[in-house]
Length: 199
Image 1 (cartoon, one colour):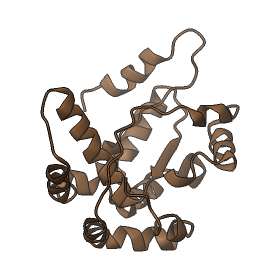
Image 2 (cartoon, rainbow, N blue to C red; image 1 turned 180 degrees about the horizontal axis):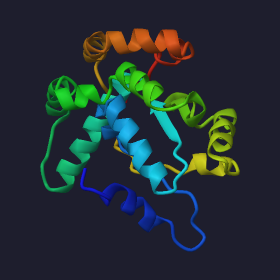
Image 3 (spheres, rainbow, N blue to C red; image 1 turned 90 degrees about the horizontal axis):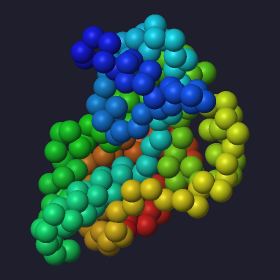
Image 4 (cartoon, rainbow, N blue to C red; image 1 turned 45 degrees about the vertical axis):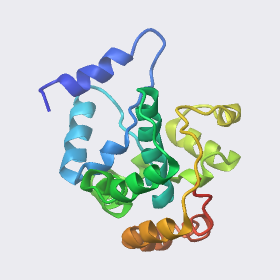
């Protein structure tokens, strides 16, 4: 990490009446506890009070959504993909190390709990994030007023597409350890992630 670059980026976002900012990317899931500790220290040294929000989505759904975004971007550049091609691409996609690592919630949760005090980490489940109670819980964690109306706005959506059940089962088996971890640590996922839409 270039010295000062990361914290200066966040400093540049705090302008006029802006007092709260953030960053979002699944790539943070690739980091380990030592990386998170360094980020925490550097931002705190720059005067920030650091809070972490980690949202977990059904692993099959997360990978399928990420793959569809890739298909969308490719088609915007003129590449035409049949549905069968998309399925074949997906089967390769979720097994690629960088994509799989972004879905290893077990590792990310362990890394975050080692790097941050529990009061500074919010663990949420994507399938619940639009519920009023969850919006309120997240808003309280961040110290902002809840705006339930925002749940009706969708950003950066990818086109819906069916995923064959056989492929769903293969992907679920690939991430079986992640499912078992989440079923134990976040019991609501046992219900939420056993009847996914896969589209």
